[in-house]
Image (tube, rainbow, N blue to C red; front, side, top):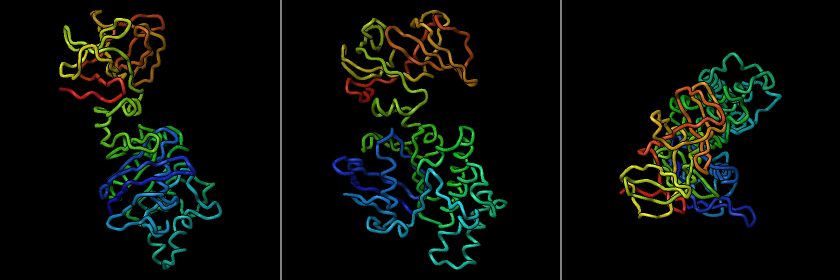
Length: 357
């Protein structure tokens, strides 16, 4: 096993920059997720670490070894692709051992490693099947097994669950995380699904247009997002953003153009009248049964079973609120909403988080 270090890494296709001077330090045995919208550079970064793309500038170290100039097969990393990349004419056993065989490993050692990986992944009864005879989850296990048999210093996952249905994705992300914890292998995991990143990773790297917006633990990014982009990307449903001006008379608050008064924690930093962006997550709204909250009109009610999501018109702003308790509301009803002031976020006019005093 080994740490992974990406230093000042840059990559462009033609005249288009894709990765812009990225620095990441990944500890030995750490599980790090790369997230961001389509085109942010996360898959290109992973492919550059794997050696499938060449860096224009910067350095990549696996442990103490610089691997920029090493061929992909010599980098001591194993990549699991989105489309599984299994050989359809080979059995599971042959797929698992093929990489080791072409490296010249003795057949006895190949068989031993394949059996070990199959036992680890519950593939022992499937070794003589071909990929077309497997379910999506079983194919993904085979793709992971092909990486495991190599005993690499780092695993690289490129959106491995995106082809699976919702139920199987939940099952497989638990299996991947459990497997990584047992093996202790340094892992870089690319996903567009921030829920996957939140539930699996030790740390998350949020990318935008080839640059890092923030790096931190899942709860750190959720509780203390650095800017509006990170705040809106991490969390589902996304954070609500309301524009207004900072005020302190009668308690810290944000006053919107249509006169709404949104409460803030007393420790907020800023000047009276300063334009700001008020951020509140859907789950940080409460219904004020005493009628002292802010009146909002119900637009859409979406029960999910574990919670109820409600789209509401709050003044001129549309917001999403999520309630654990089941509520009986219909479009057109009025609810008194109270944002939880201690959970509210304040960003300046440029979208940068405003620190507390």
